[in-house]
Length: 93
Image (cartoon, rainbow, N blue to C red; front, side):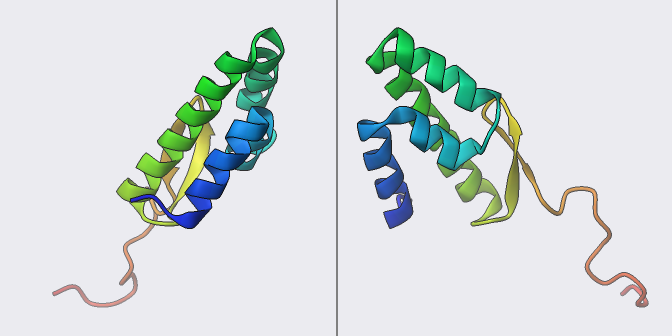
């Protein structure tokens, strides 16, 4: 499901792809890749930025809004993966 923040991110990607990549991934290798792709040709930078936005939207659908973090290379991981069960310290059913 596309939210208003995703639409705004797509508009930023249309105007300046490295800014959208920075918003999605932060200061990471993907930002450097996007800058290089944009310098080599404006269209490859767009494709990479839209791919990063698409992967973020997939992670939001899979893990819920804010329930994930970026691990690099378009991959996301759940925040609660490997943590203790929510009812630790209590008697089980």
